[in-house]
Length: 321
Image (cartoon, rainbow, N blue to C red; front, side, top):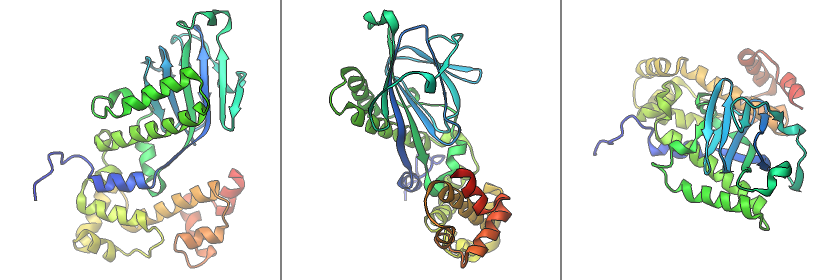
């Protein structure tokens, strides 16, 4: 078998596993037209991703003390959302997006027009498309915390030119305001954001090691993928070692050295992370959560959840509903 020319990259099998479980759906989209000077503040917490596309720029993206200039055709994904600003210049004060009057166009989609008197010269105005998105990688969700704060599509265009026609289509839909533009824009945004994530993963995930390093090891990655496919399975160290094709001791040592915890500890951590997600986001009983994760009773699940998270499942549900 010919050796891969890219040994440091994650194999396509694990990329497929990742993207298969990825769900990225828009919660709130806005078409924004503003005239300099302007400043818009976004803060959707750390539970949603934020996507921004510049149909006509330029604009400055400010996150903390860091600033990034975005020009016409640029798109960025902030996978963990959070506090950030879109500004006409780095020193302009900003107004919270929720305090700016918006015109509802359809469910989950609105238009913001803050051009004032200068709007007569459309060349001065900046056209933006922003989307707050639910970003979930399923069992592969640990990858979200490892992603950079800002993922810039401009860094991917030379390697993935197929993204460019989607950006050009977004620019056309943003300008022309044709029937159905809201629906088309939201779907294009979802695809572009997913493409940004795929490109980042395929390019080696910024060489971050740890969990991603495990996926770069074909034998260990096979075990990780199997666990994520069936978190409810009654996994044993012996079975995981057999999946990797090694002895228990070699497997356990390699697993701990790469991921920083024991194989069974990893299984428990994954189950509790999935449980927290389901309890917070889905209308299912705690008994159903326990069953999905392979626990024989709700009580056994609750004990494991409390040991791992320090909270009871009921407390998490109460805090998120």
